[in-house]
Image (cartoon, rainbow, N blue to C red):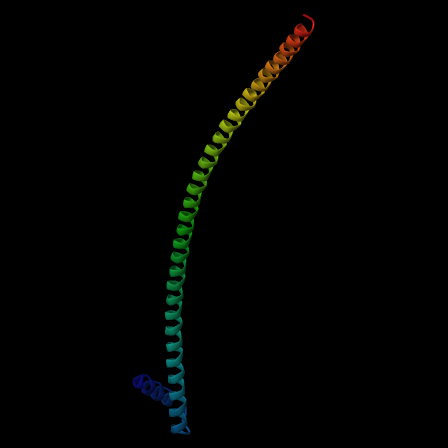
Length: 137
């Protein structure tokens, strides 16, 4: 950069009438310093841009991985839901069998009650008839 400063200083000295060489030298120093700062800022800006692109790609990959994990978890939950539905179906089948058995038991209980009632009625009539025959014999 010293070469650039020397070239600018000599060219500007040749192009215009210089009243104060120290002022010219300070002006060129400031100009070169500003050019260097701008180049450094531009390089940092480009570096920052590439780092932001890298960060954006990393975040995108991270979100894709998270989405994949959520899809895997959703699939596991769907499998668990299917198992619960199968278990619920088995319980419903068992409940239907118990309801059928309860109905058969109630029907059998009803028949036995009717048979006992008929036998009791028959025994009451037989006992009453026996007593009636013994009294009137």
